[in-house]
Amino acid sequence: MPGTTPFVLAGEALVDIVVPTDGDEERAPGGSPLNVAVGLARLGLDTLLITELGDDELGQLVLDHVVSSGVRLDEGSVRAGRATSTATARLDERHAATYDFDLSWDLGRRILPTHALGLHVGSIGAALRPGRDAVVDLVAQAVAADIFVSFDPNARPAFLPAPAQAHADLLEIAASAQLVKLSDEDIELLAPGRTPQELAVDLLAASDRTRLVVVTHAGTAAEAYTRTDSVRVASTQAQVVDTVGAGDSFMAALIAVVLDWGLDLDTERLRAMLTAAHTVAAITCGRRGADPPTRRELPPAWPVG
Image 1 (cartoon, one colour):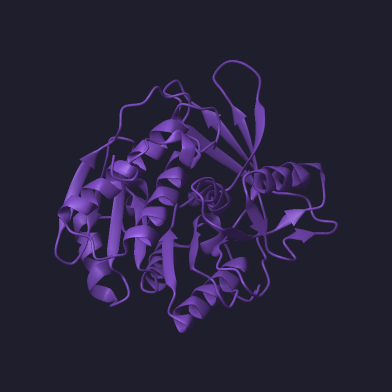
Image 2: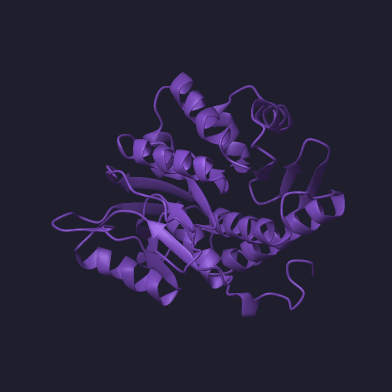
């Protein structure tokens, strides 16, 4: 893609079927990498998504959504004769979501654009074989090109291999990523028995490439760890409609800030980064479905204020 410097995301795109505790179900485009792509595009980045969609009605729903948000799809992302994957999100009385999936993932080998600004991977796309192999290959291409890589495992138990393999898969991609974001639930699934601080220290020590580890805690707080600093910032208070896509909005904000500020972050900037990500996630929580804000909806001084 000569002449462009896209930020590339690789992973699943699907349709979320949101089932509230009362009222009718709603259908909306989703999938963690897709949500992060939309979040980044709405924050003003040139964004390219590598994924798989069917050429069906649900696939068109996803395509319309990403295009209207400014996301470009990699050639070959729409597959003839294939059904678009779905995730049914059932909301509880606290508006938290649990998921059931109808999904397959067999992404073939793709080539990272020569002028890519960076690469983000995660969730089902980075866990479910055989498509995971293509995602790992894209990460290897990014490492060879010495470009920024971020990783959010956003683990879904239904798509994880045996615990030992899931832990090894986490370590494999994390070792190639400068920024790793995990939730406390991810840690329970992928590194049981480890505290967030212990896992962050382990990941930072395991690879020279890993510079920043962020851990989120169920909408209450987030922590950021580097080799020299650690900070904890409480979440921004929000009127919660649902939490669908909130973690992905948080991830998009982290990437946007790191691309702007770099990875040499002192304590003050780590706090500002987490606060900026909380702000974006809080707006998303105030809306139905994964609907991250545009840059115009954020405070004028964002990410500082």
